[in-house]
Length: 124
Image (cartoon, rainbow, N blue to C red):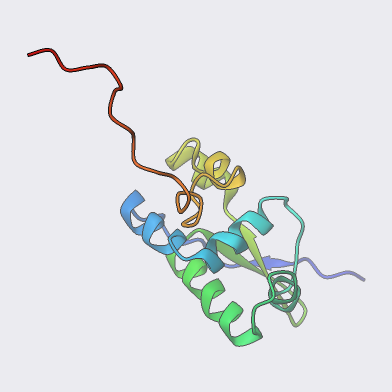
């Protein structure tokens, strides 16, 4: 007989400012990118795939859970973080697409330069 996995009660999603504050950390952003594929993983598997110490990964997963970005599914003794894709898409349309394509990466703008002024001569 197989057991039905249980899912934690999702917390209400906070405002975009708090979501951005949580996603402003590269490790948490990496976790969300990893969960975007819909594959269920344990915290240990996530830590391994992102080369994070288990305790650090657990800390970041707790932050994502406490912000309502993920829920925790339990199956026996396993705790499986699951991205709240539908709720995020409904509340913040396009956010997950930006994350998927790397537009929200803190390092994505590291090499970007400021806009250059127009090369047109200034008339006096």
